[in-house]
Image 1: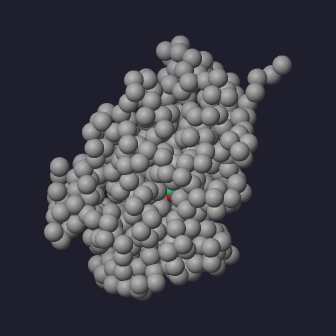
Image 2: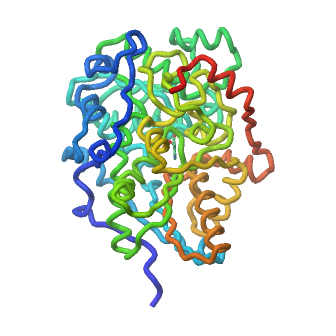
Amino acid sequence: MTERTVFHLTEKEMPDAWYNIQADLKTPMLPPLHPGTGNPITLEDMLPLFPKSLVEQEMSAERWVSIPGEVIDIYKLWRPSPLIRATALEKALDTPARIYFKYEGVSPTGSHKPNSDVPQAYYNKKEGVRRITTETGAGQWGSSLAFACQHFDIECLVYMVKVSYNQKPYRKNMMELFDARVVASPSDETDAGRKILAEHPDSPGSLGIAISEAIEQAVKDENTKYSLGSVLNFVVLHQTIIGLETEKQLALAGEKPDVMLASFGGGSNFGGFVLPFVKRKIDGESIRFVAVEPASCPTLTRGAFAYDFGDTIGMTPLMPMHTLGHDFVPSPIHAGGLRYHGAAPIISHLRNQNLIEAVAMKQTDCFASAVMFAKLQGIIPAPESTHAVHGAVKEALRCKEEGKSEVIVFNLSGHGHLDMSAYEAYLSGKLLDGEFSEAELQKNLANIKII
Ligand SMILES: Cc1ncc(COP(=O)(O)O)c(C=O)c1O
């Protein structure tokens, strides 16, 4: 009999609560600060941007947060997502390691993003919000929010980073199909966009700039709220459904993970995937967690731990996080969702506590592993997810060298069906690795408060 390769859960086995690691931290996180007063942010400070239920989740220390029934009903369109053993990859690498991946590309929009878009749209609707603004990099977050907003009959306005807007026209079409309005950022629709364009008319945009534009629109209109696709505690909280399902599926497979990896942009798929297991590490189990980020935007590996803004113009609270400086505009790599200057405060905190590791990889190396993976396993990874694939391949080769049969589990955060221009560039030798110099880093860090 051949060994089982796909581990499915039934709908009934889907977790009905998200996991909040705040309840289990031995050392509490530093609070975000109000940039005007320098005092910790209060619930009231955040209400112009987010509905109250989400702000409460942001500040909650409760271990479990119930998933509303209406959210579970939508999750059931694609969840529970499968855990798959990559037997063909193991064989090709001739490694004694056993490699598993959790596949989030089965969602309606092709990534993990709707795990948080759906609850964010739900809570906004419950509190009477009529329009939501957001940023998007490669378009995965924006298309998922557009999907969730049309479900709850909320208007959706998406600022899409200009370089991705031009690289990925089908993502824009997808958002429009779901009734969203999509604007290339920086745009001349906001003060923030106009300021950037005046200084840098050819700016390729960045997530930080798009966030400034989306926040500005929310602050100007009381019927509009803002939605963020990563970084914040409540976003990572929603994404823990990935790790909670993975725990059950690894139990079905009779496995205990030795190393878990995920790509790292702002930290939501990495955090959602590993946090339930970090609890086990805090309790004494030995597991490694590796965040894989791009060498051209190396937030966790080279950024400073500082109080910095989440956006470029400086409209968000000051967040305690690893950052490359809010002015940083990363090179236009194809993994648009990883082009963010900051890291989720919760992940930054775990890094400071040595509970997680981080590595930076070149985009061309990541695409090489992704092409091999696609040929062997039949799934074309999103450019962001190629980083997790490459990280897992490197771990499997290490196991081969050391003769260790470890269990490697990675999160394949999305598929790349709408990112084929990136693969075309890679296959024709036109994909370049962005440079990131120490001088640039020091220049960007000059004006922020290093902790
Ligand atoms: C498929 C995919 N994976 C990963 C990421 C990185 O974001 P995060 O670190 O919040 O998971 C993105 C962001 O757009 C994405 O689209």
